[in-house]
Image (cartoon, rainbow, N blue to C red; front, side, top):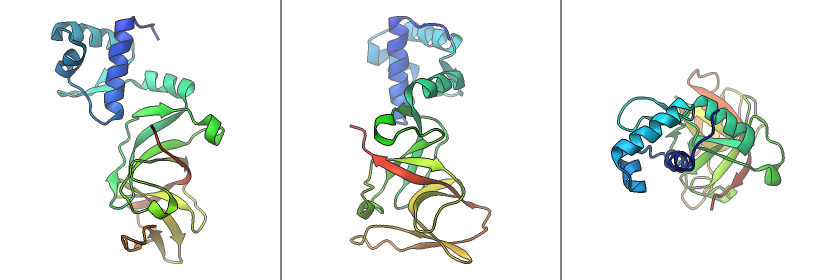
Length: 204
């Protein structure tokens, strides 16, 4: 990929940070943030697209990181944060990559793993708090009683998973709130285990 000028790097980092917050910026907002004319920002973004760092998915807030740039970051910076997972009510697990975190010192090599952000308080008794990040090892098989991530109708939730004869029990861990265990029929085509939780951390 072509190198960037200092100004292009700053604009790219700002756009990236906003995408990380799930708040894609408009060109007008980028211009306001840097105190630049909108035409100047248009040119900067055009160069970022031409050099392969950004792509446009259409619409007023359609800026996204390019697949080429994401792959480069994966090699350089570690595990991708790919969206959110709910602890409580399921939240859509967005398939866009929001950023990367290097966790080798904490968890060792985690090739193939990804990170999801937790929303909700249903797993607090397991030390998984609202706003925490969980490291997920992709797998369709999980040992009975492990904490894992389950996809329900394209929505993801983190729970302790108990495999029973004809159903799967998704158990919360918040005695004070009294969340009920949710039961899902095994073999339901709209339900699948997508991974097991191997770590949890906070981003400061």
